[in-house]
Structure formats: structure tokens, C-alpha cells
Length: 66
Image (cartoon, rainbow, N blue to C red; front, side):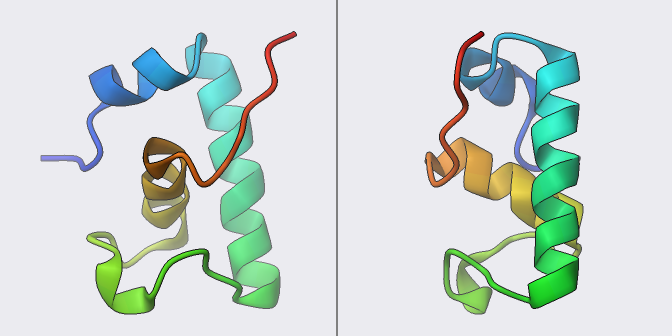
């Protein structure tokens, strides 16, 4: 099972496409500089994309509505 669920994330982000775009940008940032917004032990996922999705779900990444 994927964590966090797509249903929870789509309550935060209004479009699947925007969700993919924001999560991919954030995962690239994590890969490049290694900066995490939570302690490493607080993440459920081990990979950068999953961690980016967790940050979106936690409200650590603010997404502007266009």
C-alpha cells in the first residue's frame, strides 16, 4: 500500500498533474542537497519521492492555487 494515499493528497492539491509536478520538484531538491524538512526517522518512506509526498501531506510544502 502506498503512503500517503492519493485520496488524502488530492484533498490538499486540486489536480493530479500539479501533485506530480510539485512532488517531482521536491524530490529532485532532496536528491541534490539532502535537506529534509522532518527528522529522517519520522518518514515512513525511504525514497525521495515518497518523502516529498509525505511533506505535502504534512503541510510542510505550500502549493499556490493558480
